[in-house]
Length: 107
Length: 485
Image (cartoon, rainbow over all chains, first blue to last red; front, side, top):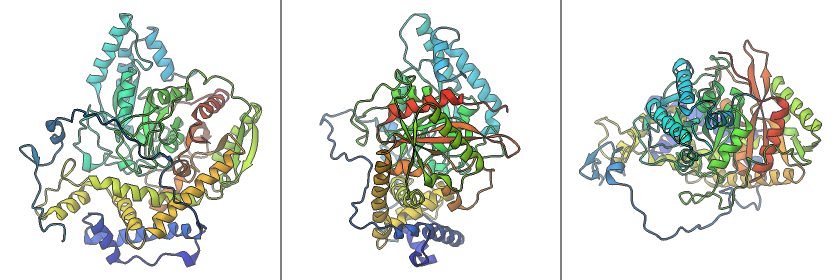
């Protein structure tokens, strides 16, 4: 089924590293090659999508055509803070504890 | 008729047995075989016995009880319950306890059902074999060296080995129907939006649907009826009335047309083709008209699915960040927020989940979105149109649920080959229609007889007709058999 002309450009180790960063996954150096191989194989199969004529077709994001279902604007009791914090890995008082935030996301 | 949920329910209600005795027998069977089969991750012995005693008191006092009073039900561990844990068979949620019950849990327990335990799955419902479960592989009761299918394998095994009266699963691309087929039980995926997803841990939000795995079609109809209907907590739940499928179930279906897609006839094992051929003869004998239908995009479904489902999963699973709940890395190397996210997620998610998050992130990333994600959504519309055309010629589409019977544990190592197991089931979810897998005989070519299933698919919201046709088939076919192990 796959048309060889539709094969995607080879995925490099740098591509895999970049996607892992976007996905917030710390992939160890030694696993990058295996992941590259698996993703390349799957993308190679998925390339068959390029052989289907999709001209003029509206993308279908969802099986139901519902739009903007509005709920009644009535206050409901919130979940107790203790219930919500019960699963938190680190807590200080009534707050979730995290490492420093400023300067972190850019790394 | 074999013992099914409806039979158990009736026996409790007419005091031929008690809820307590039923629960005790179920717990005893679990204690005997779960260490081998690994269907359950967690069993709620004490609470189940207490619930049963309460129901027995109500019945003895002549109080009116719900339609599921006293029946022990197993819940796939990606459906949240206040009782016990909800782990999705993932280390990232190993210690997670939900502060609320899913809508389906509320509806079942209000009808008197007893939640007996949580069943194992492929991590986050991503798999077709239950080998990718953080709590060990789940084994098929027909041959413990074979997989039960997945991802709702624990639920299918619990029903097949009679470790519950019925179970809930979830189906994103075949995860109810394929394990039901491989374990020889009934698996029903309703139309998208028929049953609330509130409290189902999201995988592919436009594909996911909760449904029952049962001993019989009448059990599936009853559980469906208890769970279906709009829910203010799920804005994607269909706001339309639910027809009574229980009282009409035994009616002989009016003249109906069975569609056979030519694309469903290649690459199946002979036992699977034979099961479909037998079903065709049954339906002919009932007076059904058999018509050929054309679904040329059957093969393309897997590729479409492996763009849409990972894309939605990569977004849904972003919530597991080690901050509010779930695993947080203990590593001192996590100096800032980015490291904390990335390290916690890498430690908590298994390899298949990471692979799909990576794939989903890739197909949504700058430069690839149009070529993959947008194109897959366009093909999704084509697949839907193809079904619409087919259903203009027929009422149900008949075919295999899975191309083969259960394969050996460890026997399928290539991820892509595993994905192909779902070739007949993914398009049901892509189009948002309904489908049911029914026990249909056995593959006798291996050492132990292995169940095979057939699938009936019907147009969106055609559950009343689909269930009636399925029940008519079950009456002729004779229903499920039990493994001897």
